[in-house]
Amino acid sequence: MNDQHDAGETYNYGLSGDIWFTEHQSRDVDFSYKVRVLAEEQSPFQHIVFMDNPSFGRMFSINGFMQVTEADEFVYHDMIVHPALAVNPDIRRVLIIGGGDGGTARETLRYRQLERIDMVEIDEAVVRMSKQYLPVTACAFDDARLNLIIGDGLAHVQNSPDNSYDLILVDSTDPVGPGEGLFTFDFYRHCYRILGERGILINQQESAFYPGDFREMQRAQQKIKATFPIAMLYSFNMPSYGSGSWFFGFASKRLHPLNDHQPERWEQFGLDTRYYNRDIHRAAFALPNYLRRKLEQE
Ligand code: SAM
Image (cartoon, rainbow, N blue to C red; front, top):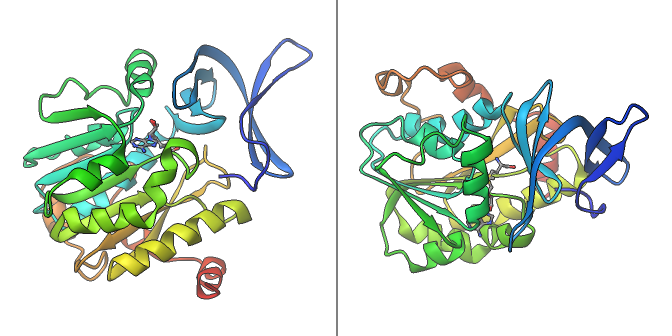
């Protein structure tokens, strides 16, 4: 996520005794929140900190990078789940990889017609702490339709039979540490294999503004394009993520996110969403010129 800048958070103690959590964006840009630290744990995989901030509410970081905040989680979780269901409203089998805070599962579980929802999260500590400190996202773990597996997402896709899922949602951390395997050719090839013919893969694609983030996006997008005939990016506004502009990747074997968009059928689900709607869907796939040019230079 950062440009080889020192990873990890720093805490500064202001003159008044306030604690500031600082996330490094690049070599020379930091972003700080005044916080009250609620809980901190070093799991076998990563360093997790839950905090409160007056503007963003309850939030948590992993290895110094903001994951979820109460104030803007609805943007991220609407945009990771709903666009795919508006392109293929017949999706029945969903695999969520990562997403230990529960927000992606919460939005997925709103679709009553789904028959199978597997979620593979590598770190039980994220699930356990989210249940304790972030009920706004971790409110759906008790739903009997959710099959939570604590394990590695890469191993899960490697071991799944062909044509197991209609939708794979990769709600991962950045391509370092345990998340690294979720940005490899091997991972994307297995995702292709285990998706049905009308299958869709949505993955976390970083931001395009800071050069370090863009390089990660470019690397992942090149691999996905080499694996799936349709591979596009779509954006959303995320105030708590570096630069405020963030992207998901939409990849599929045959469905195009705009040509096959079915807003009328999606609206029949009757979901009351705070960010996503049919106009946002179309607008999200329009890329700014600076990003088009950067991608053309690939
Ligand atoms: N919304 C967040 C963001 O983009 O910053 C991501 C949310 S979620 C907390 C990310 C989760 O991915 C973490 O809980 C982490 O444990 C999980 N994760 C990382 N690598 C994984 C892997 N190989 N398999 C399964 N889960 C993984």
